[in-house]
Each structure stands twice: as structure tokens, then as C-alpha cells.
Image (cartoon, rainbow, N blue to C red; front, side):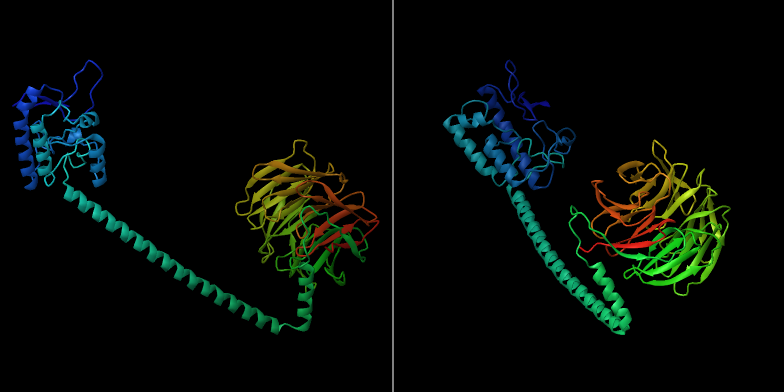
Amino acid sequence: MIAEDTETGVKRDRRAESPSSAGEEAPYSATSTVREAAEPAEAAAEAAAAKKARLGEPAESMDGTTGEESSESDNDFEAPTAAAVTAERRAGGKTIGGGKRLGAAAVAAGGNGNGPLSSEEEEESEEEESEEEEEVRPVAGAGRGKGGGKMFSSKMLARKALAASAAQKQQSDDDESEGSGSESERERAGGGRQQQQKEKEETAAAEESQKTPQQQESQQQQQQESQQARPPASEKPDYVLKYSLVGHRKGVSSVKFSPDGNWLASSSADNTVKLWNAYSGKYDKTLEGHTKGLSDVTWSADSRFLATASDDKTVRIWDRESGRALKVLRGHTNYVFCVSYNPKATLLASGSFDETVRIWDVRSGKCIRTLPAHSDPVTSVHFNRDGTMVVSASFDGLIRIWDITTGQCLKTIVDEKNPPVSFVKFSPNSKFILAATLDNTLRLWNYHTGKCLKVYSGHSNSTYCCFGSFSVTAGKWIVAGSEDHCIYLWNLQTREIVQKLKGHTDVVLCVDCHPLSNIIASGSLEKDKSVKIWKYEC
């Protein structure tokens, strides 16, 4: 902005811009005669500004306006620090009254930007500068702050620097005190954890002392089995046949280990369920009550109860200890082919040849929801880890996931070739689904995206609903029965067949993996009728 001094007629650029391109006259450029005429007026204006600054009044600029009046057009910079003022003086040259700054070239030449000075003028300039050290001295550009062009003395800048230093020191002290406080808190927390650990150990020792010798012996046996060394993931397993359990009069339809790992249940077409010791293979008892053959058996999470699915169109709930049937669940209109407990053992899901999935309340024995799930017989049902969803499979080639609360179908998965699905199961972490199809294939699905991640093949499965399972106690394997009388194990990641177990003399319809130890159970059809236990001593 160009302002004209009414007394001298000299034009000044209040923004202190650098000289423009060649052909234009630079601001503050005038003849020595005009400069001499302007000096008395400038001196008078400077004295008046210094006086008003000491009285706390706004100083007038060289164009006759106060700092507050010019703030709208010049309020472009923050208030300067002491370091900024010093750098301004060193880099740009000496400062003079009125907010003008000499260019670096002019300072090097020894002038004030308007031409060379005589010795007398130089002495006068030095005297003026020494007098202005204690006065309010404006700095062009940097001297205009948010307050509308207010100016800062050297004393004010020094006080600001001291205040900033004190604040920084206080912040450092606060950080140190917080650090020491957090250390003491961590020490207290560590002591609390040690105390809690000590109390847990004392409680465990008290409980151990109250156990009977038989219970202690059983627990030691479990620990020995479960604490077997696990091989590296790249190592192949070496399962060997340990026990052949004979007792069923017809083919074995399902085998399941109890969640606590102590028991093995086997269901059969002879209408019965037999219980065996999972570690020794010793026979325990037979559960009888169904009037037709059984297709599936499942355990409650606490290993106290079992549920069975039968061709007599019913589901029965059994007490493991007494061997009695506690409830009979009626509602399906055709063979009940599969059954599964939820993790809390409060609900049961069953699938039937009537093409429906039913959800049962275990306590009341009543059906609380019927899902019109498929257009062909339902071959498999399984709850996820938190019990909020159930997956179902069918000969119609569909895999469907259901919301237990609403009964809504959340997802439908189907392979492009649409082969009949004979078995389905959530992975242990419930992030994936393992499905067996009657095209000699098992597939691992990401049900969130509906994408098939892995395909396992090499076995034979085109007629029967052969079970599959996850083995996670000695590496990560996929285990499945086969119609060629063998059991196949695949590496979950590489899909390589890592072992093939031979021993049965008929179709291996069902397999299951022990939850704690390196044990696999298998069951076979009519020509074999045996249950076999395989162990991997690693």
C-alpha cells in the first residue's frame, strides 16, 4: 500500500516490498535533497510514536493512521521473538524509525538505502540508533503482529524469552514426575500380579490335595498325553494303530471325543451308542433306547450329556454317568441325520431328511425354531464357537449359515459345479468352513467372502457322507475318511497328503480328532463294524 506524507510529498510503501523489475523506481528511492527535507519530519514522527508507546497509546504510522486502524490490511504476521528480531537485523540490515528496513546491499555499502551518507549524517544516524535502543523500535514486516501492528521493545522480548524458558523447565519437571509416578504404579501393579499368582497357586494346591488317588492318576495320564512334544509344521505325522474296539453289531455311523478328552462315543446302525475310555480304549457302557439305527452323536461342552440322531425321527438326550435317556425330542417328519450342541449346551440343532433344520431348547425339550433350510435332505449341522450361528449342508449342493436369534439365512455358499455336500464343519477359530462333497473333494471356505481357499483331494468319496475333521495337536492337518477303506491326512496349508492310515476293511465313514492329544478315532461300515484308535507318539 502506497501512502503519501502530506508534509514532504514523499511516497512510501508500508509493506517494505523489494524493488520491482527494471524500469520501475524502487520504494524509498529519492534524491538526497528530498531525503534531507524529510528527515526533520521523520524525527518528529518518531519522537511522537515513542512518547505514545510509553503512555500506552497506539502509535501512528508514517501515513498518519494508528496501528489499530491499519491492522485490517497489515495483520499478516505473528508477533516476533527476540531471536527473530536479531536475525532480522543481521540479515536485512539496520532498522530505522517508521518501519522501514534497509536492504542488505545498502547496508554493505554503508548507507540507509537512499544513497551514500556523509560522515556527519553517519554520526547522527549512530546517535539516533543508540537513543532508540531503549525505545520502542519497529521492525518492518516482522513487527506487525495479530494485535494490529503493535510493536515490541527489547525488554518486552527479553521477558517473553524468560517466560518461555521457565514454562519449558516446568514442563520438563512435570514429565519427570509423571515418569516416576508411572514407574511406582508399575511396581505396585507388578506386586499385585505376583500376589494374585501366589493366591492362585495356593488355591490349586489346596484343590489338588482334596482329589482322590484315582482322580489324580487320571489327571496325570491326561497331562502326559496332552504334553507330548509337538513337531515342526513341516514334519509329517506318524500315526499308528493302537486299539481296535469291537462291540457294535452293525456299521459305525459316527465317533466323537468328549470335550474333556476322557471319553469316546460311537453310534451305530444297531440302534445303540457305546462309550469307551479315550486313552485306553476300555469299554464303559451302552446307551439304548432308540428303535431304529443312529446316524450321529454329539457331546455337550461339559462332557456330561450326549445327544443322538436316529432314523426313528427323534433326537434323544442322554446322561453320560447313568446312561439314561433324559429327553426325547419329537418334531421331524423324516429320518434325523445330524445333530449338534451349541457351546453353552442350552440348544441343539438337528438336520433331517425332511429338509429342515430345527433348533431345540435343551431344558424344555421343545422346538423353538424350524428353518426351511434346503430342498434336499440335510446332511450336516454345526454351531460356531460362540453359538451365534449354525451352518447346514445338504444334497442340494448348498452350504447355508443361519443366525440363531433371528433364524435369518446370513450366507449361502455353493461351488460352481454344485456337487452334493455330505459334511460341513466350522474351523476351531470359526473363521472358516470345511466341507466334504461327493466329488472326492474337501474344500476350505472363507464364508465371509464366499471364496474357496483350499481344495483337498486324493481320497475316494462319491457315495457316502464321510466325515472330516481338523487336527491341531500335532501340526495342522485335515483328516477324513474314505471309501477305499483308508484315512487320509493332508497338510492344511500345502494340501499335500502327509499320511494314509490303513487298517479298516470297509468304508471309513467317520473320523474325529482328540481335543488334547495326538489321537484319531475312526469307524467303519458293515464288513468291518469296528472303532479304531490311532496315536502319534512324537
